Image (cartoon, rainbow over the protein chains, first blue to last red):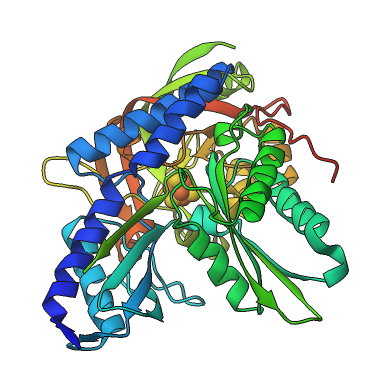
Length: 278
Length: 181
Ligand code: SF4
């Protein structure tokens, strides 16, 4: 058993939180720059140019990329040969709170009904998977509300199949229009159960834009969906153009013979993701 | 498509000339308010209380900024999605608000209110909060301090870059998706 101190995890998570909020991942920046080259519309080029400028300014100044620094979401892959000294979700939550305070990040969580702010961005959303090995991988996403609000989940019938999945995803993005700050990244969770499909959709968003699905069939489906979404012509910030989404990422699991669970998790261009392996 | 330099608070003439797709550089005083602040403002109106700022000519910016670093008036400050304020916007337009700033679509009631009361909806670039904050010279919390990021702030802005999304003549700039609903 490899023993990892709470402090080691804590420091790594504070760093993840600070870095994710300020630095746009290179693959996202590259995708935005490429999209700008491919746009003929003046407004699309202008918006994408502003996003690149914003990313540079955030990196230089330490200001968060977006004022909505989101919910602190964490996916942990915990090696079965690892023992953490302390309660892992608690360590992560405490470190997230410290990071949000230290980085002057916005505290965006509140009581669902009274809407009273929790004041420290807690609680973090922590998913833990046990995997073989003696390492621990922590993936962090700062998830903004505007794009999260445009996400949807449904239970299709088996007969609806791939056509039904496509219809649901395209329709959702057509309805969402300019709201989720396009160009977006779309996470699609197919299968599992009612609760698992959205978690798969969110997990899918962690795969870098430059990495297609390792399964060639799913990779082809991702490409097909992306092409269809971009045909909508919504464009950057909804002002028209070829770039409505930068990528589609699918995660799939077997499901019940009676069901076809489907979830669409919408991510905005400010895809703030960062991971660390300890 | 024209470019205008306007000063807030706005007058009817300022708004009337604007067409969807025009660019506006806004200078002057504007007020921040989002979900919770709108609810409180409307509760105050219901109770006949005096509001924390003058609605006549006002520009309301839908934003909840991040905390200000040392030496800056405000942190990142880009727009939030506007449809959540659609419930409140027609009433505020009828009481003199001239413009709102946000991102994303407005509903038919808001568009109708803007036609009736000469209002305009400006879009700012969502997710460009660090960049947009550079156009904000001063920020002061004037109400609902307990709401934290959702408190009402009085902002002084210079050449804040905006696009006319919905004008007061019923036009909209957003691209219609190629999709049969
Ligand atoms: S949708 Fe994303 S980029 Fe847009 S305001 Fe929300 S967090 Fe920021």
